[in-house]
Length: 461
Image 1 (cartoon, rainbow, N blue to C red):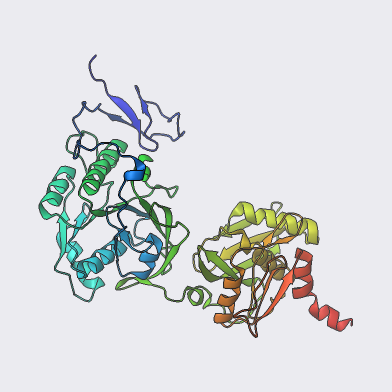
Image 2: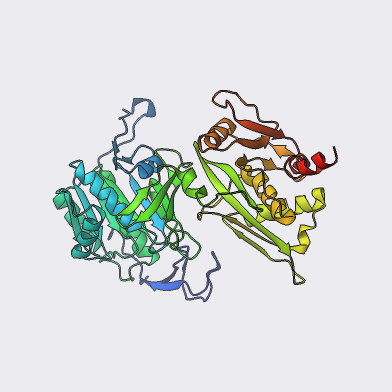
């Protein structure tokens, strides 16, 4: 039977015998591109066909070796560093700093006498050198090599010749396999180029960092199989209008995915933030209505974040809702609960919520802080000065316990806060909390009574 062309979806990789306007699998429009079938065994790149199965009990477990990048926030997210023999996929929006962070990591590894090959399919060698000199005050490590190439087989050939310890490819969507007729960036090209590089890295026990573009939905562009092939997936997030950048780990076969890295974009690259709590609340001076501080946890790390709310009477029939850095579904649940339990009539008000500094909150421990910020803005009453608030709010108004409560309060104390409002169900050890006042609450009404009704009680005592 003669080979016939197939139409492949660039979003999910599904194949069809004829063109369609919409992919039946992912329902995306105009994503089908014609591809020619690959001849059998044409692209197979076999390295070690003599290996056989082993009994699990007899497998010799070798210690994990880490390449330290000496970039504290990057090493934190990776675990202890870049694992030898691993492949890391780094994604992020254009201009967010992916190439900058990768080049900084390559420079730091090369300073430790590691042989590093920086492969760029988007920039020339001269452009890379210019950027490297700017990042490190004109200093360039002798063992850092650059190679501007888009041909995947030429890249593998150069890797064989140079035999580097670490390979960086920028980016996987721009390189092209010469034995495929499709354009670079298509599903088949990304899949085969990534497989070719990963096979070489695994066969030679090297390490690799692969930069990937993302789609408008914030996902790595290309087939999902790419995310399954790599050992770790990192996303660099942030608003290009702000200096702060957040590095998140979505997958890590050698460590936890709970850790985040915090950076500040400067002229000499991405600089790790040593004290993130001060960085995110430094604009908060005096207490003002609608502003609340929450001790937020990410993995084993506590960061103080400022939540701001603006509640005003709606001038239209349909009230407006705008949430930045806060889950809309979670925020709407809290608004409904406050409407029902506290008789606040929030449904008749326009509500705007934001997290200062471009951070995104997913932990329900910020529920109580969000609720207090809403009430504070509605009543035009500021919250008690220098007090942090945390706790999960249930739909019946109960305040549920949160994790790492001791660490949260210690971070508040370290940053100069005088007290905190926390769930009553949280057990506390008084260690390291001397001269730190905290108030425990069971229901949302208890919080309102404690924060907003003190002046009223004094006047009517």
